[in-house]
Length: 207
Image 1 (cartoon, rainbow, N blue to C red):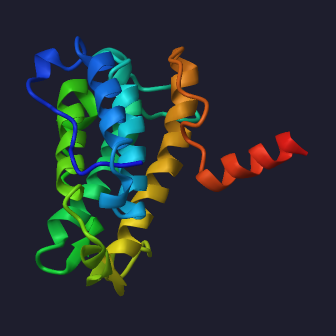
Image 2: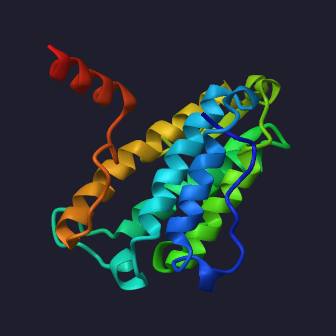
């Protein structure tokens, strides 16, 4: 269940100290009024809250640590990539054109846990206002799908792009999960698994 209230993100210094309280309170609020929130927005909130919950377990050194081959990447680098796709969608909404090539690539998001936490909360605050009418709005997307030539311009709508951002986040969470294992960081059982995968696993367990 989901609510239209985003998590409180008061000051960076208090984020980790209040992590358990804030995540617990946010989860309770998210469970309160599902009828007020489109299901797709609720799914995006769930995925972002998963990421926020992981951030509260990490220090900057763990977050920015570059794992060895074959990953050669950090938790922070993948998490920044996830957030910046949501940013592109939010920023492209007023003009009706979402440009995934225009990511800011802000190094603070991939190196500072507090900064990444606040960025996550900013996204949650933005999407909590989205109605079914918002999701139905048509838009154009700009993205480079070829290694040469111009970016591709496609017709889409906001709901389809939000679904893409959620699926894209889960894909990168799966890689983050592997890096966390390498770094000795525990993650929840469902972290990095697609909902369809979890449902399939549950059906096998019942059988």
